[in-house]
Length: 309
Image (cartoon, rainbow, N blue to C red):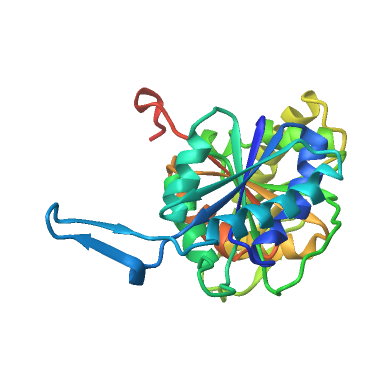
């Protein structure tokens, strides 16, 4: 699934809210954890060389040492939990340096918090996370932080996998199987039938059987989820559920995940395949940026010769 977890931190407790999830995933899945503190030079510290017409930026004295000291403290908290950790201080644009560092070795998961800003010289977490989400090809775990607190321990009970009926969306299933098996949690597959005329803030879990308008579409969605569930069972997942929802796809996914305690959402991104299916990139983007539970985004691509019509 991945062999390295890159954890960008800006020195704030908001950014550190991803760490409990890094701990539980790293202990379950294994792999090296690398902490990254990117020092973003202040524009007010820019210097201009008239002879060369070049511009560079100066980092205030002592900032590197403070960053290294900070990372040493975070490293100790993780190594104490039995996790292999390394730490790096870098300079430049945070989003660019995060993506460049993640691309170096294969099999790297980026794990970071999003939303909020705390402290002078610290990142606008939402802005940096959004840039990474839209530009990286690496798997990305986004954890929304709401308060300036850190929960030292968390637990997971379910991985929710939204599927739209396309082969692109189904590429999340091997990751779901791995998470469910290693973490010993439930796999919860959901498909959303977009509603017409329904308020966007509402969603409905549709019954497993019945009749009435649109029932044929519901039955097709249920059959599709049953097939995906069977694939997970063949991969060793013992506890699998499937639910057909109705509503706006992103809102339904976000609200459903909120109703499942200790859950994590796992979604594919990019591309669109099939009439009536979700535009994966936009729905995943909305869920990743607004979900109250962590979201694992796995970027996928489709060969030009095999694109669905």
